[in-house]
Image 1: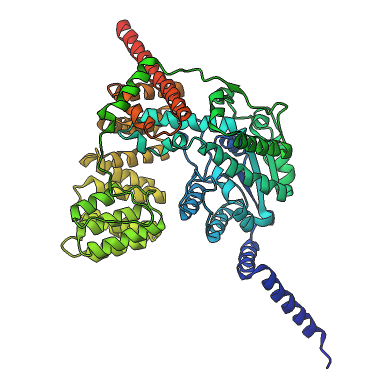
Image 2: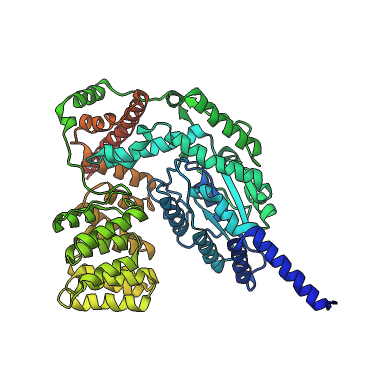
Length: 610
């Protein structure tokens, strides 16, 4: 039998096609087909630059530099705050993506290889498509990206470029411990032993284990994909490494390498306390050092001196504080029993009270991050089985589901109990939020309008609709609704924050400062004062920070310091960890005291002059 040439060509094409399916798999092939068909009408030179490294390694400074040089890092960047005056330069959507993937595996940014990471590749592809739709070349910065390099490489393939910045483990650990101890002292919560930050002292090697997990993945990626990677140390970055020229050359970009460097050496403290070494075994210490040497050996840019800088802790715990803590630990006051809340619940145990009021209270106490997907589903089943027609419980569950962006499930709860009698403004508001979350703008607006019509004397209805308009960019409509809400009454913390957020977004800084100050006066606390300081720092960062410390000390100065510290110390299993936290507590507490007295002195001088 003789075959014509076209038939032979067709047979060869189909043979190669099915052979590739067998070798690569349907999912990979369909993904590449999807990606290729989507780029046919776009710029031929597409590039996505992933900027990452372990937390506190200088990723923000590096991203800031690239942003100023012209790299598009996104339209929804995390705003600067009092803890990072220069800004984070992280796209909120990328951060949410990585956090959601970590949550799938019941972990968080504190991942230290305690579990296997489970990932949804379609989420990464969706993000890449969204960014490529906006620009043919873009950058994405997030330390968490270090944990998902195989996923990004699978999605981006040849269109991906990776810029890694590394810092010696001792400085990263020191910076984490300093940040989280400062946050705890500034917040001074009623139950510090339950704060997430205390885990760094309950498990003293945690921060170093995290550094290993992040940087081992970076090392593997650089070794395997050398032509797509640029690796530099933090010290090299701050000592004029030509990173922009290297990126332009390797990734065919056109970044402005003449842009001035946005680094402030006064904000960088590249030392670690000697006492930190007492937390690690010799084997663990050598494992850290070995990985560091391997990273430096592969670095495209390194400083002449990459050795760690150790120094003794400059602060000792005063005998007075130590005696207070010892006394509190031994007294019955520090051993008072607290009734443990039923929620947050472990992933596989969702017990909900049969009493409707207690059940509502349990659900209202839940934070968005308390439950993983499985626990949320179990809780939802408990609500359906235990309180199937109770309006208060179903609506409380709907509000929680909206906070965790489970809008379809929230609408199911709402519609289960919605009747003409209770279908009022609060139900319309909830449905408006659901449809807004589902990006059904027309239906969302209908429900928000109904909520306002049903209750025109409620400031919450106007505020919610204002947030909706603001998210769509309808700033005139949002301004009108916020003014209407303010004319009724605007004293709830959430509403005041929404209004201040809107004023910041529209760069009405004076008005934003006034609203944030009003919120802090009505509801004084760590979060309201920190938010106000974040706005005030635009005028004068040092003054904003001084006022923040003044307010925080004024808020906490009558607290029993000994009992507060004792609550923490009693949960720590290592004397070295307890000593470390106590030293840091003293350092941060003294900074509050000094700032308070300095501000009081300034006020007294001004009064004398007047």
